[in-house]
Image 1 (cartoon, one colour):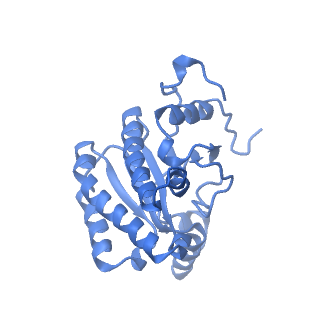
Image 2 (cartoon, rainbow, N blue to C red):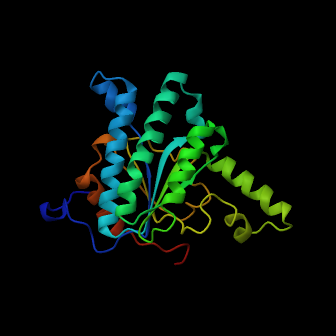
Length: 236
């Protein structure tokens, strides 16, 4: 989508209520610069912070980011340790800024695989921001859409009834609206087990830009593209 110059850095009047982002390309960003993958993850987190600020300032009510999947546990031990350390330390350090911005934090995923110290730190961060009333920021950690649906179905069945409503009530995203727009960076054209149930009628936007380079211009481009979509939800 080619944008006129005046639109390149300006948000459109029609915005998604819930924006989700598959933040992909940190490793390739680092490799392109001859840097270790951990440097790419650090650059990716810095851009995550910038994106949160942009979305909150634009008035987007819900932002969900895919930070660490269940499949990411299969990466090398060194990379997993480095990635988890960056995420845990950065989220903890970011809490005061989130509180200042009145942003609420949720963690989506199976935290049982985290060590007790990391899990306690994440839970403490969520609790510290529980009173915020502005944008809801959800970070998907150790998250897998298939596992989420299976766990929710088991809980709903244990309570005696599986319907779309009871299953949704047991998802990690319970209480959140479904995402209107899902952005994936880095040029990959797949959804990688992300929000499988919730994305039934989501719009998708794919870009070849690597996540650390996905700045305001790229975000505005995606949002302007979304603003032109005709969402019919199955209706004629």
